[in-house]
Image (cartoon, helix red, strand yellow):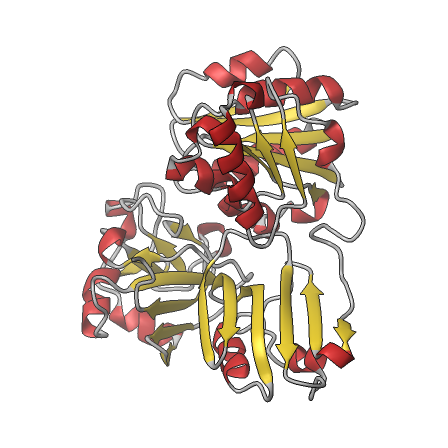
Length: 418
């Protein structure tokens, strides 16, 4: 498998400089996918003297150009490179790139390395700077010598508060990241499967699963809410509604979206001895594979299954190519449909594909024009080449759920934005 390394960070934190240094240290033939948000290709030109570079201009890899991203990685594999680096634009969400690689047809040919997230300590008060590195496996404070003592203290406090913690933290100048940070240490990594670790006399259990394991969000929340003798729980779980940080404090259970992508993990503290086989309990909370036909629509916890025939009968757009050039098929205009289902404009929507991919939550109002393509123009099954049997399109939204193939489920829930 070909190692793939994502070097992320907000605009101007020094990603290209850091990548230039890394390319000098990595042996073999190296490929780089560069995402310039504009169309000048400046960063690609800077790196082209040291590596085989594929530049994706004019859009963000995690929303408007995900198809081009996977194709670019495949192009570098076919070119025979020994390692691949990805430098997304500073406004990209690195966790979305991880999701795209894990669900790509070429995923079996890739070995995803730790995500490297750069920050400039002098700009850490900028929410965007902190956000782009908060979920990284390796957090790098660049331009450390230029940082004031107050900025250094603020960085140390910020990184110490990250939960779960990064596997490594580096403080460097000129992007000089040690190449050894690109490898997973023992006991870490997306393909590590660990066994439960318990401390019976303390009533503590810790569990971990690799990221391909998915849980039913509703079942997890119910189990934590009814856990006998459970005093405290906190974990980060890949669920059928996205990656969630779940907590129980006292009798209150909460969950929220998370940028964590390394694995699933949870710690549980019981009052007295552990009363159940916790590993077996969580095995019963696993999500089944999504059905590739029909559609489950869940609105605020109430589910309804639409058959293919019912979806075709509901289609009110004869051919979506009128709105989205290059995409063909009968479609449902999502806005009017959701209005009939009682969906509120400020509700959140996540779209789930048959392969387990879950889009980021987007408000109904932010979707703009959106369509669910349900059949080819003649009314027959939508072919896989067009993303069938069901495909979600929201080209005007710029959101990460703008183009989801093989849609199996749509979940509408109250907004989590404050």
